[in-house]
Length: 356
Image 1 (cartoon, rainbow, N blue to C red):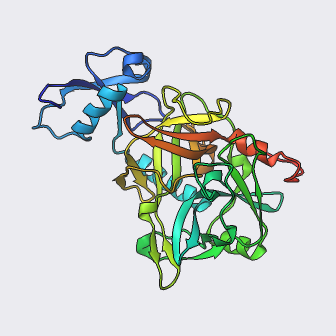
Image 2 (image 1 turned 90 degrees about the horizontal axis):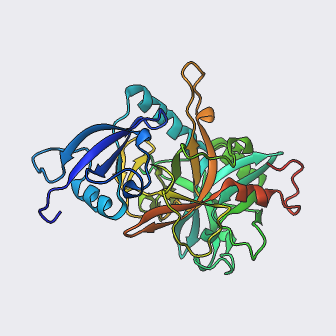
Image 3 (image 1 turned 180 degrees about the vertical axis):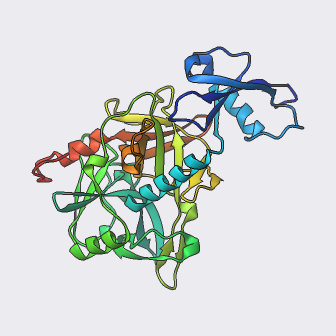
């Protein structure tokens, strides 16, 4: 911090949807543009501190905070939730894990994590929704051919590395649906036609109804990006089995629209990207890349009013599909609205009687 004192203000978010969210702003800045377009009414001041005070323990990295303040005007972090909230977080994590699975490709006698997908069931048909680019021979070229799909497989059940590795099954017979070019949408839907595979996945995972997803997101929503990181994958070459660990990234809308290749304003969603993510067991870890989360679901968290029955399915809706990220001076994640999936499923070639 160049030996210059940086006085900051620490705030808590006033929304009941964000009881653990904290934000740090430079004291001399004003609400609005200087504070990443945040509004004063959404935040309550907790305290003012000097980040250069080395003798004080902080619940975040002072160096990372100073860097973020100078580049973005805001630094956000999470604090420990209440005991009740921790129990609910565990239930929500376990709920998400039931439907979110890693997707692999077996190349040169080794498994490569391609990305993350979500399982859905509709009209007695079974689907995986994920990102299109993970199946391209050149991931940056949406016009490049698909990889050899006979090498693509998924684990039989969710199993963390320390619990032993799960067998991998290939997709078998399947159909691939996407929007017809020249539309460049990084979303793809795979219909699973192999009934044995579907039965195995039903035994180890679960399939969501499409009603658990919606094309509705509000400015006040809190989001969770869910998926499997490549660096958490453990492959046992002797058994061709893979252990995986699902991660959850809580985030908010990005306060501006960045410049991207092939923008799709009617479908693009951008989210603030922070380095701290939550393992499915609730422990925290720092990450520098989202490689492996491509295609994963982006959930909007819904607040359940006091007195109403709390259920994971009522608390979350999938509203987008994770596509890409930028890790530089700017940090953000890009997703595509659920509308992209709806447009794919409403094509006549899919043949659903009542598409979502």
